[in-house]
Amino acid sequence: MGNVHIPDVLQRIVTTKKEELRAMPGIAELKKMAMAVPGALDFAGAFRKGKRSVIAEIKKASPSAGIIAEDFNPVSMAQAYAAADVNAVSILTDVQYFKGSPSYIPECRFSLRNIPILRKDFIIAPEQIYEARMLGADSFLLIAAILEKEEIVDFLGIGRELGMEAMVESHTEEELEKSISAGARVLGVNSRNLHDFTVDLSVAENLVRMMPPDRISVAESGIRSTADSDRVFGAGFDAVLVGEFLMRGGPGAVGVMIKTMRGGTE
Image 1 (cartoon, rainbow, N blue to C red):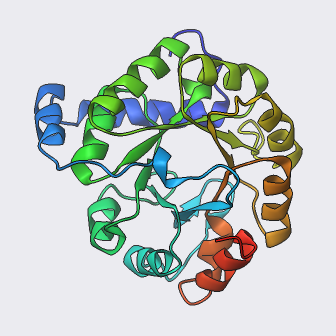
Image 2: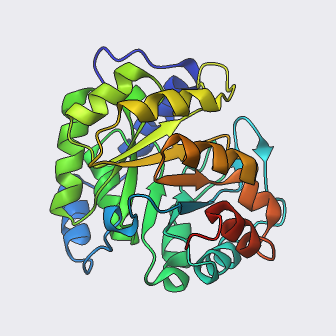
């Protein structure tokens, strides 16, 4: 992480992750267990240029919104997302700040047999990547704001050795340039400012113009309506990652919500 300037909220989370790492098994043991897991699903291949793809998220809470789903059942949401034939599912595994759990990945895996799972957490070390594969994830999130370019390159390489393609998230031009030059194939843009938690979709609209045409572009955060999804798809994004909007809708409503976001193109 070196000289990267990290927003205060992220700095607190990174400190927690360092503490969690000290309690994890050794890297050799984690790698051995990860390598023993059967082949990962193709996360990057789940998206098609020009199609409205949806990454649906399983998320109980967040620092900005507090508890999102009081009656939280990750497996029920996974089943609803599978029935809606989403392109991928993002699962929050951070315990302290998002009320997630690593156990949600294996719990939901059976319901998502043919749908790639993205581990959504704050990855700062190879151990977390091996753990993601060991749990059954097919992809993982890398946040450019907390990583040096060299770390992104290394972590992408570790993932690819395991058959996993990461999504690399940016919020600024500098972070996006770093992600592109590191070789990320799936580029996420977080419209939320992690200094003050404000959301501005124009951030996504501006950054998507910088993306090479051979990369998959994903708009994250602030998709609170079908009008918002129309807006970012109209700006040129290949996919949206939607959590709070769908979680508040609940398992019974997400099928119609996802179909509407796709605009009938699927």
